[in-house]
Image 1: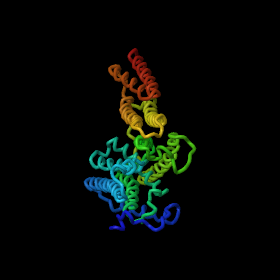
Image 2: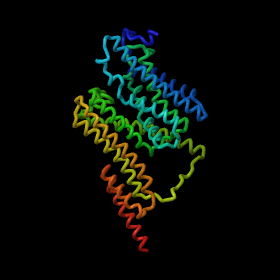
Image 3: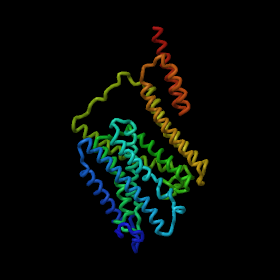
Image 4: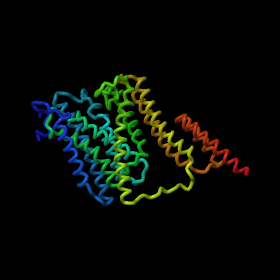
Amino acid sequence: MNYFFGFDNVLQQDVDWFFNINHFLLILMVAAFIVSWYFMLSAKSEKGKRVTKIGLACVLFVLEISRIIYKYLMHLHNGGNASNFNWWWNISFQMCAIMTWTTIITLILSATLKKENKFLQLLYNILFGCAMIGGFLTFMYPDCITSNYPILHFVNIQTILVHALLIFVPIYLIKTKDFIVEIKNFWNVFVGYVYVGAVSMTASLISGNNFAYSLNFDLVDLGLPFPWHLPVVMIVISCISLIIYGVFELAYYIRKKRNNQNNETTKNKIETNQLGLLLYIVSIISSVLFSMLIILSTAYLIGQAKTLLGLLCLLGLIYMILMVLFSNQIKQYIYTQFDEKDKEKHIVYIVLTFIFALPVGIIYLIKYINDKKELNNKQQI
């Protein structure tokens, strides 16, 4: 037990985990974990799947809470106390820590809500594009592995298991057919990055810790001032996510074609309005771009000082949530037949779109004018 949990059980010489045989063996071990879990967790009944999801959520919860408790006990062991313990850093607001709690919540909701739930589908895409990528990057560049502890020490086993589960859970959701990877839903991944960016930036500006490279990308010097290095980092990670999305969708497409299961998409009774579709697309893009701009601009104005003003970065997240909800609502409404009785409702939508995002408001106003003209022409005929 002392070998596994011992605070002073350090190695005489640090282990090098970067781009060598140790790194290769680490990746093989993680791959073995994921493959074995994939075949072992094979419940076919809905009840069995719910139990599995709750079980995975509990395992992640215990692992994450145990990490915090262990760090605190180690701090006490080394002569520290509660007042000088870095709660912010040890609770952690890194991308993977945020995604760990998001995964726990998603698994619980997935076990209790219907499969068709739109919020769940959003969360599944966030896990696939953010949590899984975070897990991959952790093992591609294993700086989270503590080099002066044995590989079988609690600190390293906890890190390996949590990040391996971040990779495994999205794959399991695909296996259970709760989630289908589709490029058309790739925009959900950007929603996830804004969510991570808002939370990590807020925590960083309040605590002074560099969560999720919010204050500085200390792996490589990009030569960009704070916080404008973040869009570059996000673009790089997004490209990796896009490649994985493409691979999964291609595999899904080939399997569907092989099984001759290509079904024609059911057409809406009301023909899709192209201008309305453009409105929906622009509203989604605006929700991501404007929210990112709010977060980055707020961070730039506040600087890197420790201050509660960092809470203002959450405004970007709030804006994005409202805009995504509004986009989904307006998507349903813009395809309906224009009716003079709904004039007040249209005007409310126009005002809201101007408040949320100017481009969306302009397009919706154009659509409103065109639809009204068409209605007047029909009435005259």
